[in-house]
Length: 495
Image: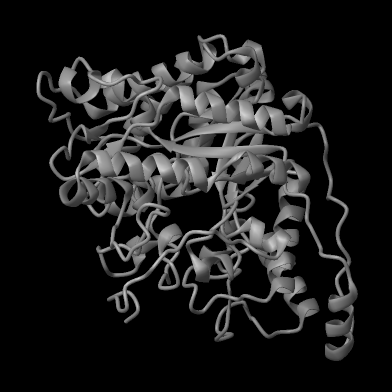
């Protein structure tokens, strides 16, 4: 943990991790053995803290959530129903920008800021970093919105973006395109720096991830503007004083983000393992056509240049390039050619990390209570393990895609134990969920690609934490909160 050069994406290790033996017992003997045996704890390299500094509605759905991806639910109302402790619910919301706007409209900006302050200070604490370290986690990925660097937009509207103290103050800001419909609460950089110091004290590293941009740079409820359409790649700002391309504003945010990391004090900087300049650029655009592939790759190349010319590479910090196949018609060919020409072999072996996410919950490796997919949740564990081994090695499922697009460093920055994206049909058997993690980790290890579990905990998403999306639930056996999250009595999603 102390040396990211030795433990992170450029590790020289190869081959499979020591596997945990499968249980080859009859049903009754298996039950007795599981009751007597110590808990199985796969040593996961990294974990995400989803829902902390970048909200997703399903993480806050109480006991009424169902779909891991609300965009596929057939409804645009979202599954969010709370933001404890100040907003216990029921308070229906679809994305972070939608939630802030509704809080401002109904309770005022001060109440909105107080709600987000209370959430951020309680959702992840110093104790969480200590617990992660105790479980052997080496790197914590922190998704966050562009609101940490909202002051970059001050020339476009000094009042909206330049009247607060970005280090220690908070304010409500409008989206740079959907200003009347989407708002965010800024993230004080001084407070964020303190969180890095907490990580350093606990002995874990941090991968900082810019997860959401003005106007929406990808499809999904984490983009802060859903259910509105992503316009980052195609539109200009609608700001008061000046209008410029949103993509240009995005590069300004990345530049400020890098400069902030460079300026960190020694202790805070010691916690930084890497940076991600954009999460899943143009996710789903290959189906919905809201971005041109060439434009996305040109923007990512420009962001790479900003990192390259900073002091971060020579100070041991890595750049994670989180591309996603859903943005490209031919991911393997297009991205391989681009990455090989945008970076040198030396960069790809030292600081340029090609990264992706992979979920069995969206693959041919799914398991459900109906048994109509790869396996049924009540199937014999040994047969499920065999099925998973075969399925996870199929190139068409994407888990081996990184081998075909890069000859250098690679990582899987998102994966989970979830067996299906509809929690009402997903498996909840702890033994099976652990097995799913183990088998995925075997493949990741063969590809020499460190993995990051999604997500650390889900105290306000009951069905999801029970079906493989909470690492804390999986490894500790419980994931609770002293705060309530109340879901509405009925929802169109339940139908």
